[in-house]
Amino acid sequence: MIEISSKTNDHFRRWSDLSSARGIKKHSEFILMGEKLIEEFLENPNFRIKGEIVHEDLKSVTMTAPKLKGQRIPVFKLPKALFNEIDVVGTHYNLLVLEPKEIAPLTTAKAEGLEVISPLGDPSNLGALARSSLAFGASKMILTEESCSPYHPKAIKASAGALLKLPLFKIGKFADFVSNNDQIYALDMKGESVANFKWPKNVRIALGEEGPGFSGIKNLQRLSVATQSVESLNATVAGSIALYSYSCQHR
Image (cartoon, rainbow, N blue to C red; front, side, top):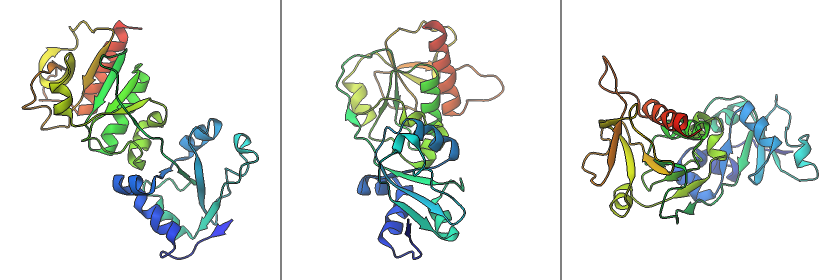
């Protein structure tokens, strides 16, 4: 076990960077946080583990994990005060430093099943959308240039681990993708109600940020979720309703 007691330590400084997309990209690492998420991951460790972080009251989980038998994974012990600075979502549980997988560019011209396009820049919104996408049978999630990192700790937490399971692909700017592709649907304030919409089996649907949505973008086929007494729903709530509507027609 490697003990670290100073904020000037190179490992600590690197981990401190991993709460931002820039840091994750720079160091090619992300931190998995949360007892349940880590327990599930250790049953099927499909990302390379670069280290485990504990404090004085925590015992290593990688040393005793059956699927990791024979692997030499470094365990770093921090004082609680320093540990809490890395544990940005406040799990108070062991942290795993993992190596992210390269997200491949999207190469298929047409949709294959339900494909969800996300330009969402808020990690919690991206995570919530990924969770619903996995729950309702999405074949993949397509991340635009505007999207936040799927390996942001808040995104993974909000996804309940879905971002570690969903096939992820990347594209450039959303507007450019739309201009070069037909048959892209988007949830918006105005459009055909998803309650009456006959969903194609193979479809790409996009969800935008609350507020600006997809204003000014042409060549989109717009869908909406009808509401009463309120002008609109949270983007990920509306998205979940739309994805559920699709799944009901294509179970």
